[in-house]
Amino acid sequence: MYDVITIGSATIDAFVESDAADIVSVSTKQASTEFMSFPYGAKVEIDSFRTAVGGGGLNAAANFAHLGLKTSALFKIGDDFMGKNIKHKVKLSGVDISNLIESKTETTGFSIILLSFEGNRTVLAHRGTNGTMKESEINFDAVKNAKWLYIAPLNGKSGAVLDKLAQFAEEHNVNVAINPGSSSLKRGLKYFEKILSTAEVVVMNKEEASLVTKIEVRPDTKTENFSSEAIHPDIKAMLDKLKSTDAKVVIITDGKHGVYAYDGLKYYICPEFPAKVVSTLGAGDALSSTFTAALEYTNWNIEKSLMLASVNAASIVSHFGAQEGFLTFEEMEQRLKETPDFCVDVLQL
Image (cartoon, rainbow, N blue to C red; front, side, top):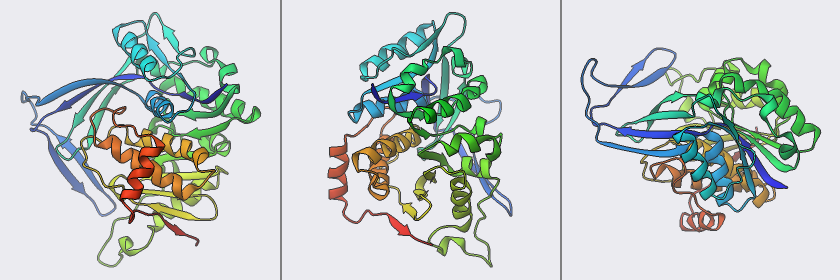
């Protein structure tokens, strides 16, 4: 019996940082977008380079195990040096790997993470085995014997197993937390309605929420000042639309602007916990998995769970690597005591 079983990607992440990277902002009347740029046709010097094991499924699993939960991870790797490194690192994190899938003919997924001087990043991802998971390869008995099923982003052909997994979990009274990927979300809310309706927790970032709900977050103009409102009306509209699928708690993350949540009765606005940002990679995985675990820890206190999740995510962004800097619940509680002004705004509209 597992406290939680995660399913999602497993990768080798290569972190690349170069002072030659510029941040270019392009604005239109409807939106503003930022790009990381390098001189075209130039040979660019790298200032730092390192590798680590990552992927949404493994990041969450490592965090759950660090929080003391009996955890297993369902992921797919190739029979190559990257797959062997991943297997070794997952074992060291205390995560059960008896449900992993190995392919003799495919390559393990990997990512190249381009870091900016601001601490943000652009990811170049090769799916590899992460995009070829099949329903026949999944150990459904392990899922049935878990208290929680945590679904991290599944891309490519692997996304086809989502419906079956969600339905199976619901039939066997397994709680579901889902952090869907952008590739799957491009199919729209109608495609995800069945999956989201089975979920206790749904987490996505603002861009993903906009993608699936088709709602754009309008910037301030000379005649409209949305930033003066407690919660941006377009963020609220996203939360409302996501909650209409019957998911119990929906969460939208918004980077340095914090996190928004809605449970059908109250809206929660949790600011970003103060931290020195080194790399934002893995922050979303840490936040969503910590929130899921914290619901059990706090007896479903959403406000407290958001605060704990924000603290752990802040610790992750203070380190290189998506699995560096995990805190225990006791350490999170201590940091909250040391920051008494940190709180969640709760609105009942």
